[in-house]
Amino acid sequence: MKSLQSSYMGYNLFSGDLNNLPTLPQINISTINQYSFCIAEQDKAFKKALQDSDVLLPDGIGIVLAVKATSGQAIKKISGTDVHQHLLIKLNENKGRCFYLGSSENTLSKIKERLSREFPNITCECFSPAFKRTFSDDENAEMLQKINAFKPDVLFIGMTAPKQEKWANEQKGKIEAKLICSIGAVFDFFAGTVKRPADIWINMGLEWFVRLCKEPKRMWRRYLYYGPIFIYILMKEKLRSDLIHSSNIISGLQKS
Image (cartoon, rainbow, N blue to C red; front, side):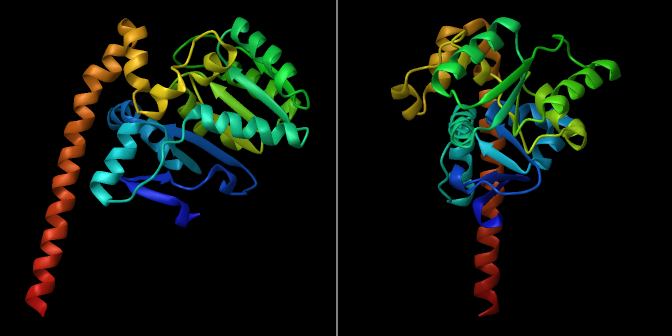
């Protein structure tokens, strides 16, 4: 697994192909982008949840460029949509079971309708929890009871970051699922309740720009406020790594 990871500021990013996902008794998959990176710098529980993930996908062009700038290693962006589609194909091939936890009843209904058309071999169940910042013990118990009674191969969680990652990290020992996957907005993308930017924008690394133009009131803080903060952190890390590299060269020359 280590050969499929790239390290960036304390995070072990998955840099392999999705066909090479680790085979463990249980796998917890999360994604990280420049926005969640900045939020995690302020939220210790969120940072721990990301660092504790068995697989942490680089779901953002900013993260991909940051790794390239600081280590020289080229990794590719793997979005929540990518891993969701990959897992659905595998589940359909194996007549598997998946559970969707999060979002609204309307979105979950549309997800089930699309699954029945495109992935007819998948058995699916869903639950829409209360929309709130934190859950009570009784609410957690209800969610766990519904998931574990169904015993899914894959649990998809779509409660937005950082809530979904922290919930998965806190509850994973009680969840009876082979794979836990926090994918946030993918629920709405797959249901069609929110339209994802066209592939041409995604391939150009400009998905963020299209989303900002479409939803400026919701997205401006994510990109226009946290974007510069991420660049500032990146520049500091780049300077630090360059200084270490220069120091090692000087030290090597002195020894020779």
